[in-house]
Each structure stands twice: as C-alpha cells, then as structure tokens.
Amino acid sequence: MCYKVAVVGATGNVGREMLQTLAERAFPIDEVVALASSRSAGREVSFGKDKMLKVEALDNFDFSDTQIVLSSPGAKTAAAFAPRATKAGAVVIDNSSYFRMDEDVPLVVPEVNPEAIAGYTARHIIANPNCSTIQMVVALKPLHDLAPIRRVVVATYQSTSGAGREAMDELFNQTRAIYMNSPVEKAFFTKQIAFNVIPHIDIFMENGDTKEEWKMVVETKKIMGPRIEISATCVRVPVFIGHGEAVHVEFEKPLPEDEAREALKAAPGISVVDHRTDEGYVTPEECAGEDPIYVSRIRTDASVEHGLAMWVVTDNLRKGAALNAVQIAEVLAAEYL
Image (cartoon, rainbow, N blue to C red):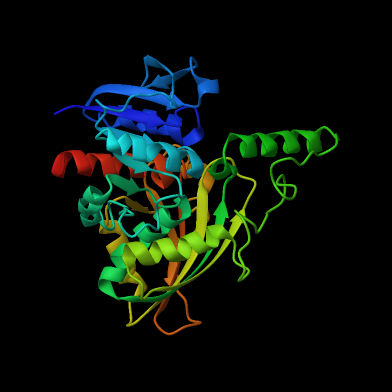
C-alpha cells in the first residue's frame, strides 16, 4: 500500500531533510505534499534527485485524503494544526516539543521503544524526541539491556543547525567578520558563537537547568524508564551540522567495556569506531550526511562503581530529527495502518 504524505515545515532544515530521507529510503508514497507558512507558499523544494515540489500553505490545507504527516514546525504551529490534521484522519509524527510529554502521545525512537507506536491511536499523534535525546538513548539501550542503568551524566556539544538556519547563518557571518577584521554582530545567540561555546540552549528554568537539559532528562525517562537518573549540561558549539555527546553511565552491576563494545556493535543504528590511536574516533564533521549514530572512546569510568564512558555523535538533522521520524512512519505503515 502507498500513502499520501504531507511534510509540514518543508522549507526548514529538518523539513528538507525529511523530504530527502523519504526519497532515499523509498518510502511507499502515492503522493507527497510540501507544506509551510503562507509566506513560503509557491517556493520550490526538492524531493529526491530529480523532482521539485511547489510549497503549499499550511493554513488552508485540506488533510482529508492524507494518511501520514511528518511535522517539523515550531511548537505553536504544531499545536494549532495537528488537531485539525488528526480530525481529518491523518496520523501526525511531530518533531516539535509540544506533544512529547503528553501521557497519551507516544515518544518513540524505533531502535529503543518501537512498541510504543501502538499508542498512537489515543490521539493519532506520535512525538519525535529531542535530537540530543535520540542519539543518547540509542547508545544507551543495548547497554541497559545488559546491565540496568542507574545514572547518566551527559555533556552535549550541539551544532548550530539544531537551532535553525538563522543560527547557522550567524556562525558563518561571525566567522567571516572575524577573518575580515569586521565588527562581530550578535542577533540570534546570547553570546558570540564563532570561536566560542555557549552553555545555554533554550530558556532557563527555576532550578538552573535550561529547557534543553530538562528535555533530555524527562524524555529519556519516558522512553527508557523513570528509574534512570540523569544530569545534563547542553552546550552550543561552532559547528554547522552534527551533535557530540560525552556520556558517563553508572550501572547497577558490572559491565566490562569489551562486552559493552560488542553489544554496541551488534545494535541497530549504531556504528562503533573505537580505536585508541590518532583519528580512531568520529567527530561531528565526519558524521554530517550520515545515518548512523557513531560511538567512540568506550572506556571504564573508574570514578563510580560499575561505570563506563563513551563519545556519541550523529547528524542531528538526520537521525536526530528527519530519519527518526521517517523510521517511525515506516513502522507505522508496516505494522499499524
């Protein structure tokens, strides 16, 4: 069976990646529609190598003959249009933060909790987790299956593409200004991003965490179980595409690093590149445009009992967003629709 698929936010970083991923993976599509705000209507976006789609306005789009919606607008837009789409009979797979913590909306990473997709029938909405959460839980799952995880401490190194095109443009423009000895203008980020790092992603909360850090905590608990304790520090770095994470894990029982390494090698969606030599690890620049989550620097963390440390990187626009949504759609189409 083939499906009519609508991509909401088709002119954004993730929306364009969703269209590319649908084409690359040969999703069973009868028709695909690119949707965005009315100011973007009439623009063209690519679908695969040869096809161009004319963007239609989301505001007045009729979802009555659409089966699957891949959604990547802002949270406010998702909140406004998703009920209209589901009322018309579509299933919405949403990449915004708006629905993630709703009890009756499954939060899904197919390599980790594909069974949760069955819960889509409550509201016909499935939430895509935050990009930093996705890559971490995929790396944690095969280890958690061997030895229950007690605690995770993670520091993220998140690229500017996670904040959108304006953020990427600001990194480019500031870098150029520095090399040209011109004034460095700051408009999007709270501090200069070129040749700098900013320990601040999303808004600050009362306890001192940022909302990005809170997302990693609550989303991981919803996906993998509430008993896991998590401490996160999320940092924006001057990279265009690709998120890195330094992940320190404490288990309830011993897990030798060799056993952990073999489990990660056997896990779906993971590529282990872990050689204790120069260049024996993967960096964000190298993972851009790639689907896997790369795990490197696997080693014992001797500061805690039963501890391991690892370095995890992935293309945040692909597995951190678009690919994960398309994988959800693949399971939904194959097993539920």
